[in-house]
Image (tube, rainbow, N blue to C red):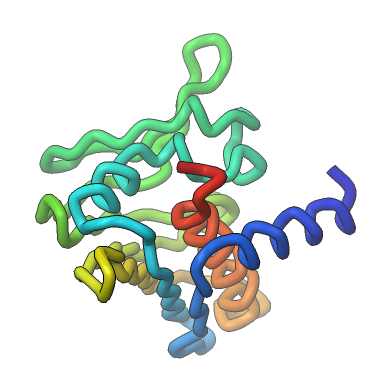
Length: 175
């Protein structure tokens, strides 16, 4: 997909879903914190069910295999947010460290290029009931590590990717 088509696709997702609020909360040489928020058009139980089916809403372009159907999330202590690769390969994207069904999911690790850098973080999804049967979903990713250019340089790109994923999560076309 060309850059302009990809941009149009992302803009259309964001405009067709509830507004996504994305923010770089803090950033420095050793790490950063990003926070995104979106209103999901359903009760917390429905939002939770969608959240844990990560392959249903995560963008295939942000996978190693090119197919989000290869993603899985195991909701148990030490569970895996994993991805199947060809020839029996796999990627362990993150480890499940906290599950409060219907309200909180926390996973730790480095997504995408952060993993190859040895960076790690805690990604927490918090679900809160909102007005008119909706659910506010907050995703906060606190990352620490080393980059010769400084970790602050990575905050905006990571923030943009997570905002895009959260928009896909809430978009009716992807439910």
